[in-house]
Every structure is written in C-alpha cells, then in structure tokens.
Amino acid sequence: MAYCGYVTTLKNVRKHPNADRLLLAECFGNTVSVNLDYFEGQKGVYFPTDGQLSVEFCEHNNLVRKKNESGENVGGYMDPDKRNVKTIKLRGEMSDGLFLPMTCLDFCFEDENADAHLSIGDTVDVVNGHEICKKYIPRRNPSKNHGNGGNKTRKRKVDIAPLFAEHADTAQLAYNLGAFKPGDEVEITLKMHGTSQRTGHLPVITKYCGPNIAFDIILRKNIFKLFKPTKKMVKWAESKLTPVYDWGYVSGTRRVVLDTYDGGFYGSNHFREQHHNAFVGKLWKGETVYYEVVGFMDTGAPIMAECSNDRVNDKSFKKKWGKTTVFSYGCHPNGWSADSPGYNLGRCEPQSDIYVYRMTMTNEDGEVVEYTPDFMRYRCEQMGVKTVPVMWKGTIPRYDLLNGEHVMDGEEWSAGDWIKSIAERYYAGADPIGKTHIREGVVARIINRPKFTAFKHKNEEFKIIEGIVKDTAEAPDIEEAQEVEDENA
Picture 1 (cartoon, rainbow, N blue to C red):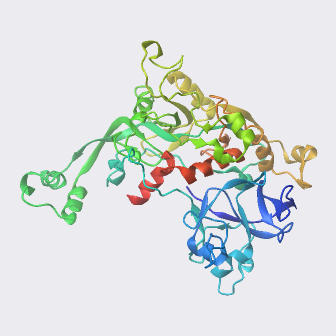
Picture 2 (picture 1 turned 90 degrees about the vertical axis):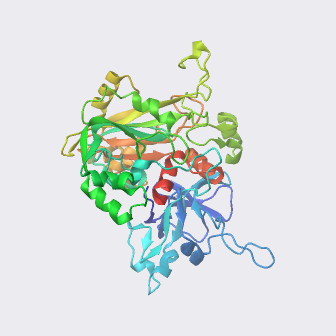
Picture 3 (picture 1 turned 90 degrees about the horizontal axis):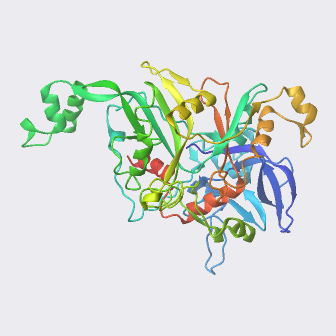
C-alpha cells in the first residue's frame, strides 16, 4: 500500500466560517485547514489522509505535542507515537489531510532550499535519503482473541501456484486524473469496506520429485534422526526437488496464498473457506476471481472494525447513523434474518457475503487476459455469485464537448476532472445494500484498457470514521494486518 505526499499549490483559499485564526483551502479537491500565513497559489507539500510522518520530519517541523517545564504545549498537535494524518472536523468544517510549505523539506538539502529542487507534481516519501512519510498502519498488539500464527505458504521457497497473481493496490482517483482520456469507457462501482480474497483454477503443486536423500533432509527423518540438518543442507535438498503441477483450486487473501484456513493475524481464516468453495467446480481452467468479503467472521466479530459515532463529534451524524457504525452490508452477526441460511431451522450462525469485482484468464505461460466487467458479470451469474453494484457507466466526451459545457474554477476541465465530478455524485450517502451505514466510496475503472486500470475515491465522512477506528482499534483492520504479517515474515 504505497503512500506519499504531493508537491502542489493551494487553491480556493478562503476564510474559515467558524474560526478567526484559520483559513480553508483545497488540494486535489480536498478541503484542508491552514493558518493565516498561507495564501492562494502557495507551493507546498500535501499529505493525504491515512499517512504517517517520520520522526525526523516531525522533529524538524515541530509537529508533535511536547511540553515545557511548566507543562505548556510547545510543540504541534500530532500524537508523538502515531504521527498520523487523518480527516477531522475542525470547528464544523472538514479538514482532509495536511498541507505544509516547501520549507518543511529544507532540512533534506545541503543548500536548505527544497523549493529549488522539487517541482509541482513531484511525489514525496523519501527525499535525499530522509524518510518523510509512509502509510499509517496501527502497530498495537492483537487482542487475546486474535492469533499470531502466520500462513505457511508465504515462507515457501517454491510457489504453490506461481500463476496465482495478487490484485494490485488501487490508487487514489484524485491524484491520477491524468490517467483518463476523452473516449475512455468508464464504469463506476461501489467500493465496499471488507477484506480481499481471491480464488483461482490454476496449476498447483501436487507433489515433488527428486532424490530420496533430499526428501530425508527436507522432512528431517530416517538417516537424520540423530541430528538436525544445517540450513546449507536444507537449501541443497530444496534445489534437488522438482515440483510437479496439475490443475487445481487455490485460495488466498490479497497478499497470502492459503494452504490452511488456520493461523493468520486474527487467528482464523475459516470464514473465507465457504466463499472459496463457492467457486470450486465452477471456474474454467485459468480463471482467477477477485472479490470482497464483507460482514462478520465466524466468531460474530465484524470483519472490519466498528466505530463509536460519539467520537465523530457531530450530532447530526449520530442521529442519522445511530450510536455505532458497523459495516454489515445486510449481513447479521448471529445469522437471524429472513434470508439467512438455516433461519427456519433456528440456527444462529454469523454471516458474511462476497461481491466479485474482477476476473482474469491466465494461460500456462502466465499471460493474463482481463475480463471486461460485462463478461465478469456474465460468468458470475452463471456461478450464482454477486458482483459489486454498478453506480454509473459511460464514455468520457471529447475535449471540445467537455469544455463547451463545463468550466471548473475558471479553468478547462480535463477528462479526469469530469470523471471525478461523476464519481462524487455517487461516493457519499447510505450504503445501497444494507442501508444502515455510510458507504466507503466508489471505484472508477477504465474498461477499454488491456490491463486492470481503476482508481478509488473515498468520501470525507468515511475517512473520519476510518481515522477514528485506527486510533481506537485493538489491532489493525484485517486487510492491513496482512501488511504487518508480511513485514514480520
């Protein structure tokens, strides 16, 4: 999950309606709060929500809270441990991200003049060997109900299914408007707050061939009962074994191939097994399906952490959405609903559901063909599984038609600006499936590209919820926990 800051300029700088010492401005269409020293067109660095600033960067810019001998705060406002950038409501107005002047990076250069070295459009994560920022993932210890066992296949020397491709991270729409061109066919779908899973019907390891002594060393048996083989011996043995592949089914999370549903950061992946099995016997050879799992785990705990709406500090939000935000998508923690399996039998089982968002066909040479969204939905209908809801589908007009009808802040619209305006018609409001919580946002996919090309766009209210969850959850969410596991593997 890549994260970076962006060198850009402030736009639409204006007075804050409820604070005399603050101004509001825009970066990439996001509203940010700045102090009275800032001005229209000012060059600086914008750090989007969901990032973590480095200790060095914060020290040079006095951004974290610290007290003097009298107990007065002589630093900034950021938590010294988390140092995370988030979306907040400040005096009744959204502040989405952080904007700082170019001088914040002067310490990275010998001449102490970052403005001379960085241009508009540059990205910032590491500058001249100085780490500036990275994606923020809470590093709390998991609760006692969470496991700490990893998934064994991640550490294997030989891939269990080498053609089983990960789904690439989806970049942010606001920072990639240049990817869109007039004439592009675009589909906007609902972005769902769950955990990724993938299932493929692909060549998988069925057995190994090689010298018997190699098996003895790998399995540490027979002639090696009296002592343990060295790492060098094991490495030699592995080099002598040849994996044999045959067509089979393989399952995985976004990052990890699963040969067992035990272990993992949260102790168990058993809630995933039923969804993998839904595709067994139905996928064609070479097909891989990517889908979002939403609702609840086998324990009844929500897949994605819930949020106390009291912490939003917005009475209207709490009145509309209740005391707690639970991303249920119409699922029930105890299985009691009229359309639940076993409802008439009186069973009480936690529910989760899946929504497919991508399918591919991979041949034995590893060449991947991307299914169009329409053909993906056709295949899913055949298999009896759901797909992510479509919010809008259309073609980006020619430049002359775009700018004959639309002007944005006195400037001509780009194709990306136009798509962003369409996306923002659908990215906020109630989740259209369960209707009990806010939606996360939308994904804009360019259909006419040979490779999967899509960009996510989250709404500000969701970003506030997401920031609160990261500040209060006992552990990273189930998706980001995989990032922690990968780092520690």
